[in-house]
Length: 366
Image 1 (cartoon, one colour):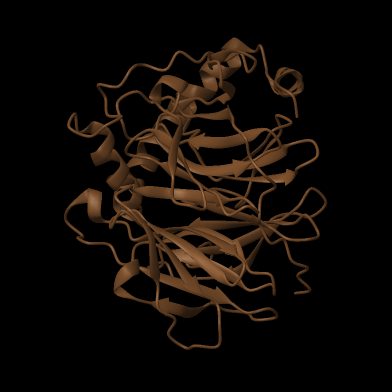
Image 2 (cartoon, one colour):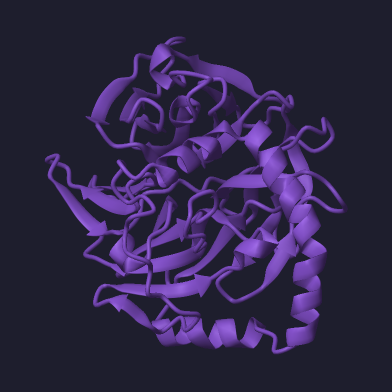
């Protein structure tokens, strides 16, 4: 999708009702403050990111250049970066994860932490109906274009994976216990749904036709490193399947792992990369990996030979990137912009040479 088409889509969904938006902001402010307080309790991942963002010794911290992006989706921050959408921090509009639903048009959907799904057409929708503490993170898609979203909640009737589509209302697809810290999710080629439990440092799996998750892997390589240090409080985070491996990032340990998918009841994780606190990531069919490095405010490409190239930084408008989606002519990243000091939640497009993404979207019968 061209930048001009994005702009037209956004303009179509925007409102000029200034008074109404001001009233909405005031109404949302109380709920947003409660939302932040509950986030501090239930999402150690984002406490981690807050610690990184506020520490001047960390690259990309509050001393980094202020983003120059504007609301205009066609404006270029630098020659290779464009702002697709700027969100309102005061309303809790903080994008966390993303999936391209149609590569030919580069249409995509992004989860916002405040129980919202935002489409590149400008449409928004609530995932969990009614009033709840639902926080929406990882997202995946099946062959029928149904979307699956990881929802954290202290409500046993809400926590789990929710599924919906343009034609179908959102319903809980599979429950989890409220102590599970759902984060990144992804499908395998056979329809297995994998989910990261960042808080407990485990990978869960839902087999095709199953009704509940089982622990697929519980390993030291997936664990947080401390419950007291916010930087170390999140373990396994992003997940992606490539070939016969499940790739997983561990934010706390600063590693990217690959784990063989086999009949072995205890597969052994192999370290692919270290030294970067990766949130989520994407892979293309050539084997290149695109990393959203939240603390560094950077997007990094790692080629199959291991060569690393920084594609975007804070100068490109990055403010806590959390997830990556591969488009036709570059990558799209979500900017959480949440617990740092700049508060610029947004979605940024970075032009780059990419090949087709590898992202299984299997047929799900259940």
